[in-house]
Amino acid sequence: MIRIHEIKLSVAHTEEDVRRKAAKLLRVEPSAFLRFTILRRSIDARKKPELYVVYTVEVEVAGEERVLKNARAKRGQIQTGNWNPYRFPVSGERELSHRPIIVGTGPAGLFCGYMLAKAGYRPLLLERGQDVKTRLADVERFWQEGVLHPASNVQFGEGGAGTFSDGKLTTSVKDPCGRQREVLRIFVEAGAPEEILYDAKPHIGTDILCRVVENLRNQITAWGGEVRFASQVTSILCDNGKILGVEVAKERIDSDVVVLAIGHSARDTFQMLYDRKVPMEPKAFAVGLRMEHPRKMIDQLQYGENASALPAAPYKVTAKTGSGRGVYSFCMCPGGYVVNASSEHGMTAVNGMSYSGRDGANSNSAMIVTLTPEDYGGTGPLAGVVFQRELEKKAYEAGGGAVPVERYGDFRRAVLESMEGLDSQGNLFSGITEKGSLQERYPDFSPAIKGSWQFAPVHDILPDFLNQALVEGIDLIGQSVSGFNDPDAFLSGVESRTSSPVRILRDDTGQSALRGLYPCGEGAGYAGGITSAAMDGILIAEKVASLYHPVVR
Image (cartoon, helix red, strand yellow):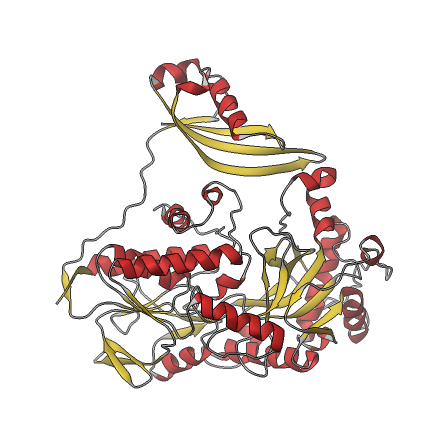
C-alpha cells in the first residue's frame, strides 16, 4: 500500500484531478490504481488570495516496488506499509450475571453500547431524556414558546448535548489504537457523509447528527441491546464496595457492570453519586460568552477574495493576558446560531449550533477563560457546579429569561469603567476606537439566536476578573485578526457548559473504587467533545470486554 502526502490543487478541481496528480507522482496511469482512497483533505490559505486544497491519498498498484523506484516526489511525500483497521478485543473470562447497564445516550454511551451490542453483550441503555425526534420537538417548543422540559432539552436526551452543536468531529486526543478512525467509520455507516473520513476538520451538523443518532440506536437494538427513554437513574445500588445495579424511579435493575456515561449537565446525578461517596474531585473547566460576527466577514478574513468558492470558514484564536490567563475560542460555529441551552428553570446557558450547510448569516464561537478550583472557590468536588449555577442565574436575571445580548463596544466600555481602564497588572489595555464598522459594512447584521433574546447588561454576569480577561484577550486578538474586536460584534451569555466541572475517579481498569462502576465520557471528566467522548465510550467497552465474556447467565 502506498500513501502520498501533499497533493496540492487549486480550489476548482475534481476528484479525477486528484487521481491524475497522484498518478503523475507515481509515473503511472490513473487506470493502474487497483484501489484509490482519499485519507485527508485540508485547505491551505497561507498565501491569500491564492488558495489550495491539499490531499493525502492511499493507493494500491500492481508491482509496488517497481512503481516506487520510478516515482518522483519530495522527500517524505510517499510512504509505504500496511495499516490495519481497528479491531474490538473480546478476551474476558468472567461470567456476567446480568447484562451491562449504560447510563446516558450521549456519544460515550451510544458508542459504548454500540461496541458491546455488536460483540454480543446485549447492553441496556438508560436515558433520562427522550428519543431524538421527541427531543427535537421539545427543544423547538422551548426556543419558540419558552417552555422548558427539564429532562428533554439541548443538554438531555438521545445523542447528548452534542446533538445541538456544530457536530465537530475533531479531537486532539492521541490515538495509537485507531479509535478515532473507527468512530468516524461508524458515523458514516450510520448515515453521515463520507467526507468526514478525510476532511481535516470534519463536522456533521445538527440536522444530520439527529438522523445518525437514531440509526445508531436502531443498530444497537438490532444486535440485541435495549434503549429506554424517560428512565433517569435515581440511585446506584452497591454492597461491600461492589456495584449491584441501579434504580430507575422505584424499579430495581440488577447488573454486574454499570457504565456511567452521564453528560456534563447531570448535576443531580453528581449530587447523588457524591451522597453515595463515589470518589470524585473538582476539575478545571472554562466559562465565557458567545461572540458573533457576520459570516461573510469571517470568510473574507480566512480566505480572502476567493471566500465565496469555499465553505463557511472556521477559525481558532487565542491570546494570553498580562496576568497570564489564556483567552481562546471554543466550539466555533461557521454559519451557525447561538442557542439557548438551558436545562434548569430560572437559569440561562448558551451554546453554539450549526446545520450541515453552515449557511447562516453569522459565525460564532465561545470566547472563554479556563478556571481552576482555586478560581471558583468553594469546598468539595461540586464547587464548580455551584459556580456554574450562580452564573446562569445572573444570566437569566439579566435577560429576564431571554438570552442576554450586548454589543462588544458597550461591554468593553462598562468593564473598563469599572476598573478605570487598568488590567490586573496595572497596565492600560491596548484599546480600540469606539467607532464600529461592522454595522456599516453589514447593515443587516443582528444576533442569530435560537430562542428569545434581548439587549441586556451582559457585563453584569461574570466576575470582574473574567470580564477583564475577556476584554484584554479579545482586544489582543483584534490586533492580528482585523475587525474581531469591532464594537458592533455581539456577546451573549453565559457559556458555562464547556466541559464537566467534576471528575469521577477511575483506575487503569476503567473502574471506580466502587467495583463494577465505569465512569465514562465528558460528564465523568474524561472527554471534551463528540469524538473524544465516543472514543472514551469505545475504550470503556474494551475494558468491560477484557474482564467479561459476552454470555450472560
